[in-house]
Length: 204
Image (cartoon, rainbow, N blue to C red):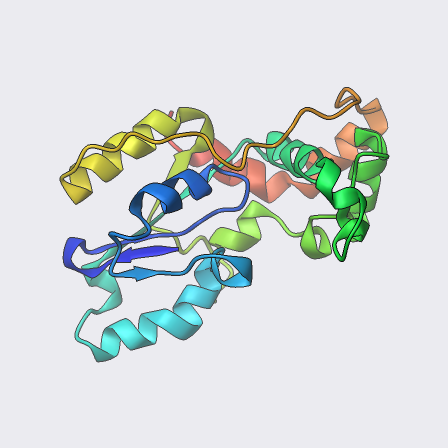
């Protein structure tokens, strides 16, 4: 998460949406930056609970700044987790349980629906990430990950600087194709219904 108080802007780092590239480019320029480990991906509800009150104490009421985030096509988001956790370095070490290289996409989705998929905490979703404490979407402006250039253009305008981003932390190709049975695809789409509703409401 990156905060630019003088620009009245907060950028949440949605997992698997290219935010590592933003962090690499802007992290040192942001007056407040949460990077690495579990603090990087501060959700909207966490922001409202812990950080918005601190901003309010400094005279920055919630209505005075904008919170933005990327949002990925829901099934693509789940697939990206599957590919990301297939990295060779996860075959050993303390995070070995996260490895997905041995799982078909079908198997991965089945475990995701049960809330135990490697790399996806408790079957979480993007809709959870952007929800405020009241359960409704709390992020002021969402951008489709598939239109990343629109997001970059917005940031360039808000921050008054040119941004040239390099791809980093890209999910590798998985040894298997991301195929799903009709029944499992239907279950996943139902599970991601709220995500699809939000994604469909984003311009573009």
